[in-house]
Figure 1 (tube, rainbow, N blue to C red):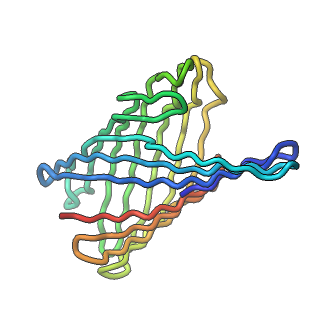
Figure 2: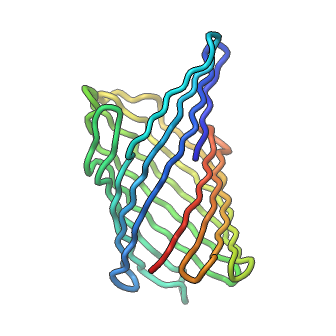
Figure 3: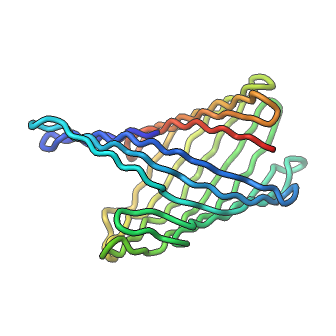
Length: 226
């Protein structure tokens, strides 16, 4: 869930709380290889307050559907574990149209477990192609992100993780005209994992912006394995 506030001395106050419901399924084809599909459903409530009063409008939609795979190149033994992931957007919803197979992302994760500490680093790059949104040729900006973190196993049930995510994003383009300039942002990430059962884990993650764009995200994930 994210809250975004837009305000200036000469404009109304815009308040946009966003709730995203995400569902995903993973299937392990081997000890080192798994495939997955995930989808996001978005609900936003746009509220405007000005001198004439307040108004609001709701918007609910299926935002996107992604599919990909993870492959473990090395395990956490004499060397740190190393995993690579590749995914593509099967469906993305925009204001007037939707797009298929117009966004792809590649990521690499490495981690080293030194009981009870886990050091990890994830980096990825998303490439977006031009797609139609009504009469407009729209191209979301490509972006690179780097996210290091430190996890601490408090006991056999609870794990605490802290880290940050740095992102470098190109400007979006409308009809091949850049909307702004390349930008960077940094987010603080705090996470708590609760293993309520052997095959069930609940993660609560807070992502708060500390430089660049404003806003914060609160996420609750439930992972159940069969």
